[in-house]
Image 1: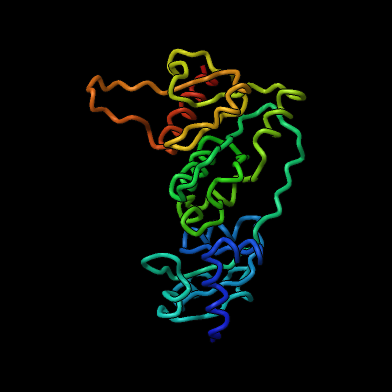
Image 2: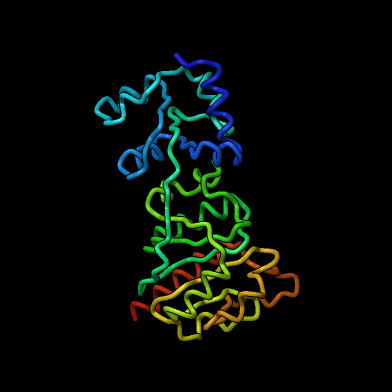
Length: 255
């Protein structure tokens, strides 16, 4: 059984202010929860129907499970179509130790579309990028739509909310890792010699990367359009651009 107050509490986690207040977020769907169960994330509680329970009898988190019917799952869900299981999860307490290693990082400035944010986290996971820094005006990475769009990659990629100016300053003063800024008037990514490691900066689709950060770029890059039609698209979707650049960046490293 589940009480009305518990239903109300879980539904409140659809909103950022309550996620911040309780430091909890929700995860929905069988695949997502399967990934969650083998991650280091701490589960607060699980709510599922009997079909899900039958397939997960050996789950180590079975003591956290409350059986509910599909009607209740619909009440709890942030999606149009509810899944068989919903988990309430503690937000990880990630603390950046202010030490950059010789590896690849993503830096996101003003990415406020949940689908884009989730997809970028998934792209980072695919290309082996384990840490992402996001500006304070980015969408909450624990927004239900973001979580869903990551398809489980959120459990493998650390996302830090950061003051980007301080982040870039620290890098330029201490570590001097190359900084690749994706901007419209940057150099052609297919002809530019890219560094093996560094920070890749992706900006808001409409505004681009904050111009205050351009001075920190060691490489200003862009993806050229091959459409000669005057009515061609003005820009690429931020997640699509991230995928293309990460692919080219990794190709350079394997040459």
